[in-house]
Length: 80
Image (cartoon, rainbow, N blue to C red):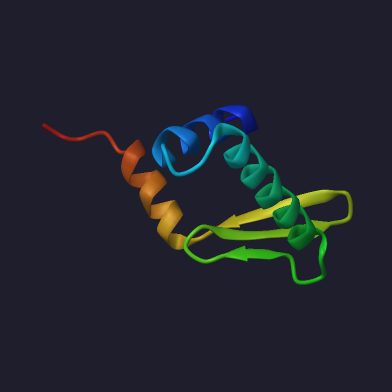
């Protein structure tokens, strides 16, 4: 998902509380802060989502069990 699409979805859910411009600024701020966290020594941990850590030039992501279970349950084929 592109940043613009994410901002649009958040804007649609937040009407009339925030303007489109304000939502776009919030999304940019969030991404900037996440980048700072990932680049820090501790990395970035989002409870219930996963951990991001920079290793050299690469970024690793370790999803939480909650996210893994949710993704795996969506990929299962229901038996009839």
